[in-house]
Image (tube, rainbow, N blue to C red):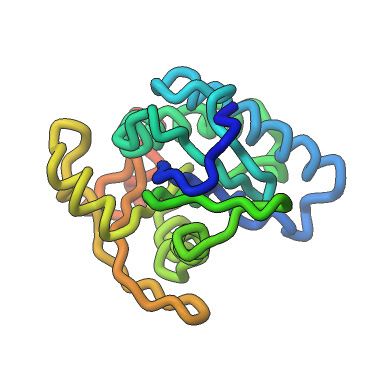
Length: 212
């Protein structure tokens, strides 16, 4: 674990389980899904050049905030993290009952990290939370039926995504307005494994690797 993040410029990552408190999710289902999320995150980070034991994380009930040490490349949050996390969610959903199926909203940003002894605080932590809670992102995930909807700040899009098109095609991202509480900003999002131009009725078949 990165033991002293306070004041450092770090990669910021947050994930939230859509509909975690839905009526079909009793305590047993919630505990199972919560535990599964951590297992998927640990595997994803360990296989993406971001060792989980080097990161600092804070539980958010229905999600997790992860601080990436400044010694690790933020670009890995753009690729391969979203794709690998999507694959694990897909496998989880295949072997779990319907009430335990999950969809994830995922956000990435870069900024200085501050810790007050109780938790992480600061403008950039707040911005990350607002990105994750953006209504257009929620809509994107619900309408696509995707396993993961990934959103990144304008700063990360301009300085990582657009400058490193070998990681991921910038054209996959959709610009969206984020208006949550006092935050007004523009962000960029996409659904791994789901082409933006693909008709909605075909998307489940494509995610399953076949055509109707």
